[in-house]
Amino acid sequence: MVCEYKGCNLENFEENDYCILHLDFPPYESDPEFIRINALKEKAVENKISNRDYNFKGVILYNANFNELKIKNDLIFTNSYIKNDFNGKRSEINGDIWFDGVKINGNCLFEQSKISGTASFFKGEVKGNINFDKSSIGKYAWFEEFKANGEASFNHTVIGSSLSLKKSFIEDNVSFYGAKIGGYAWFDEAFIGGNTWFDLTDIKGGLSFKKTVFKNIRGKERAYRSAKIVWERLGDRDRGDYHFYHEMEAKRKQKPFYIRYPELIVQYPFGYGVHPSRLLFTFLGVLILFGLIYWFIKGNYSMNDLFENMRFSFLTLIIPAYGVINAKSGILGIFIIIEAFIGAFTWPTFIVTFARKYMR
Ligand SMILES: [Zn+2]
Image 1 (cartoon, rainbow, N blue to C red):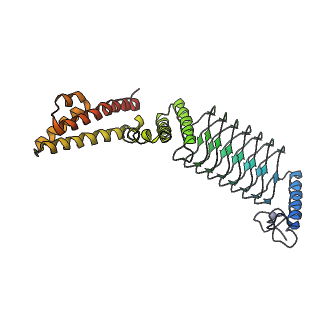
Image 2 (cartoon, rainbow, N blue to C red):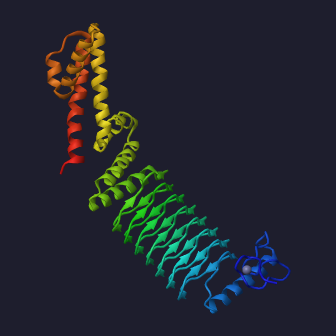
């Protein structure tokens, strides 16, 4: 009989439907049967390695020890289940590593390894940390929809092409200190629970945190600042502005409440100087609101008078002194001063924002 795992042609183990590698463990680790099966699994892995067969698709192992191995082709662990750690430190892999849909209950460690091709962990899950410190990945690092309950560490890692952690979930810190990335680094729609380090990271393409969710506000600020610097250096002002806006928002949220809340005015109506359209709406809103207030207070409800009050509101906004000089006393005078005050800030910000966005 042959193992029932699709594509596996090993003989089934004893009375089971599966071979020793695809066979599930008994429930208790202290069970002598568990220990016997684990020893046989380890032996089967050794056999495969000595035959230079590195296709471990769908296998169930307790520990995976691939430290200091030299592998001429791909290392395949697609849809496998490792009950403890995966160790691949200081190994040399001439092909790709395929870990799509893998489940690792411990850590996944690839420190100081050399992978010539792509590292793919699409929909993989690691309960502990994932670590590629000081390793190199020749082509792509593909971690979309990947999940780690610990840290994701890529310090001093060299990635030849692009990196993607789109829609991934990293519960703890994300660290790319001193890493080199030949293409883009995408973190769009990902969740990051801990702090972030992108200091001294050299990214040739760009660094994107579009719609990324951060639990740690300090981590958010650091990530968006790094991304802003990368995009500005590349001359992509729109993406630079997007990341600057979120950096400012993260900074605001860390301030004491008596600054945090008043600063909302700078964030929403003013858009931290990167959203001219928002400013335009704010400007028009204030113009119409105050025009209507003056019209209402003066109590002369003709269309002609409405137009006259809108004109007065507009002039007060763009030339604050105009309104104040013509200010009446009483309640009307107070509203004119308020509008003049708003205008003194809004109009220059409007000009600066427009000039920054559309002029060189
Ligand atoms: Zn099998």
